[in-house]
Amino acid sequence: MFFGDPHGGLEPVIAAVELLRPEAIVLLGDIQARQPLHIELEPVLNLTEVWFIPGNHDTDSNADHDNLWGSELANHNLHGRIVEIAGYKIAGLGGIFRSKIWDPRQPIEEAAFLSSDAMRRTMKREERWRDGISRKHRSSIFPHAYQQLLRSGPADILVTHEAPAAHPHGWQAIDKLAETLGVQLVIHGHHHQDIDYVAEGLMTAAAPFRAFGVDMGSHLAWPLVPSEGAGSESLPQDLLDLAAQAFGEAAQAWLNRPHELLDGQTPAAFAAKGDSEKVRRMLIAIQHGGVV
Image (cartoon, rainbow, N blue to C red; front, side, top):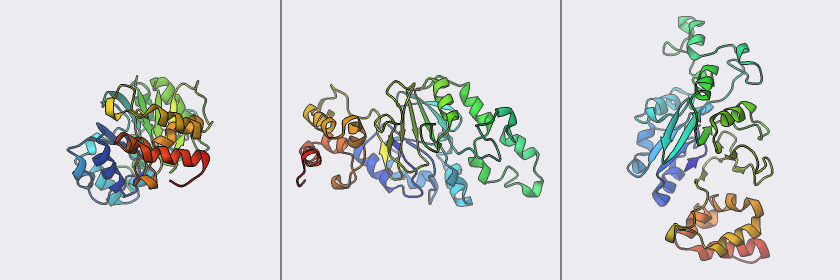
């Protein structure tokens, strides 16, 4: 499961893990844990693997930085590497592009600094933070980290804080990375939107990869819906048909988006737990009108 920017609110993460018991979770940046991350997520550490990439706000304050990189989970940072998690090779690119470091619309040779070490060497001692680069730029994307990841493939899934080019504020550099790594899926945070790029017509089904954005407080489960043959966990076919009739290509996105009428659970998870009738009534009401 992939979780959008928590910004300190990790309660939905804990609730979803306790309910759905995923093999692993990935936090998509802007975590801003109020305590060291391993303490914040202590209730679920024996239930799932926890991984993350940093976001730009994870260097807003000393506490934001230290509660992430000073946590016992610090070595589960996916930025700049590929790790096999729950049967998938997942590549991570955390942080954001900052033009003071590197504007990826320009040739990489024109970057102000190729690496954090190169930036550090230009700084006076009094300008450094903890004898390194400034705290802020510890969540900047440097060309060296990007190029290292580019050479590390292949991978199945790419998780990023920045969005791919199909987003109005996205980057072609994310697309290039995804295509070079050969991933089937790109999942990002940062923009606080639940987006299924194919369902919303921002990408075609023939694109080299499928892309999703995940909103603050929301999550994306992968695979999107339980597969056929998953026994009691599979969704009834008539419910899948109702969802398709009500939402068309956006059906899976709706099934996997938390809903307030389902106590914050996704319709897919709620139905799989044995109450598909309520989800069925919701879909009928959405399509034909009526009371749930």
